[in-house]
Image (cartoon, rainbow, N blue to C red; front, side, top):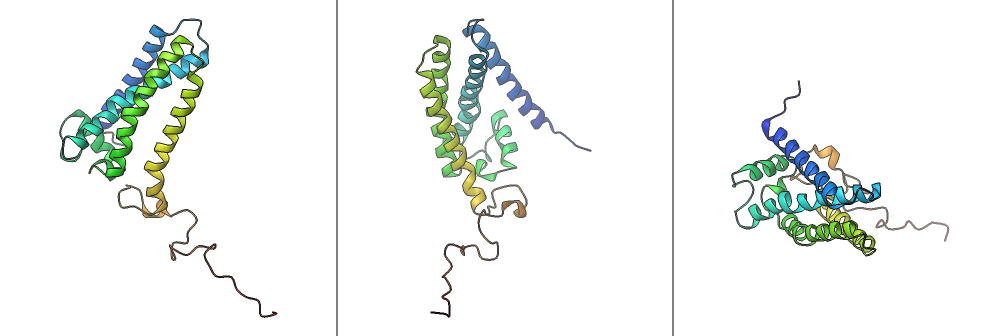
Length: 188
């Protein structure tokens, strides 16, 4: 039987609360006649901003001003400890993860807020800034997770068989078909 602990329930409720807040903000700040795509984008950017400021901001705070998430106490520390069961880099203030999370809090979060304003004001500049934000988000996700899958990692809480590096033979990790010397034909 599947056992769900209280931390998991609280985490889902926190995410649900952020979604509800984002939806309420869209009702308050967008006109009723706004296109559905703008309403969905507004909800997404509001949710994204809240996530960057509240959830990721708490991680940056715990990792920068506390010693690490693992040694911290409180509701946000418990949430990040739960996440740390899947990826231990979040428990022990991994410098790469902390650096990327700082960027998301100080760059992506405010950009989301600007996009909320631009959507409400129907500014044409929003299209450019949406592209910039989406690119930054994809880049951040790639830099956060791809290195851990490129080289098998002890930080990830998944079986080693799922961490097989892409494009490499597990028995010869540094040998590649592109690096093998070409065989010379004996006919020359």
